[in-house]
Length: 165
Ligand SMILES: CC(C)(COP(=O)(O)OP(=O)(O)OC[C@H]1O[C@@H](n2cnc3c(N)ncnc32)[C@H](O)[C@@H]1OP(=O)(O)O)[C@@H](O)C(=O)NCCC(=O)NCCS
Image (cartoon, rainbow, N blue to C red; front, side):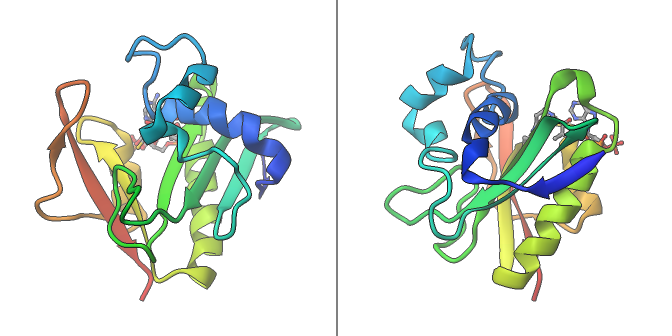
């Protein structure tokens, strides 16, 4: 397994992993390219490499199969798990055939180690039925009280936050 910092050239992989993270297939999209036309999702990746962007890429045998990244949003264009303009929101995806291999845990650990140096906290949005909730809890994320919202799938998504200090 390898983990390395995400570079500007990784934007295509990030679109592919946003497709996984947003369950776009279940929403009827056939390809990551369609995310570009959905502003509330596209803003997680478009123009990747902006100031404040931070990410990691990982995989096996030199093949990138997952990514975790974070980005700051402002009040005028908040993301799903937005808390404030100083708290970046995290997104993560691993290729379906690679899930359950420890890659997601390694990506999260590497990204959070890097984030700790730059930010006081990190947030994310997750569907309550997603098994990833356990991963986030293990790493110290806690649910933000009152953050539950009905998502496009008709289930509940919550905001979780990890405070470093
Ligand atoms: C969540 C995800 C990034 C974790 O990556 P991974 O490589 O599977 O992670 P690991 O092997 O390190 O396992 C860690 C945790 O991931 C979750 N996980 C494992 N396999 C999974 C799967 N097939 N689907 C969803 N989550 C899974 C579990 O929470 C697991 O913890 P557990 O053992 O306590 O159940 C990955 O499963 C994924 O891309 N899922 C679909 C997209 C997604 O849900 N992204 C997050 C949106 S908030």
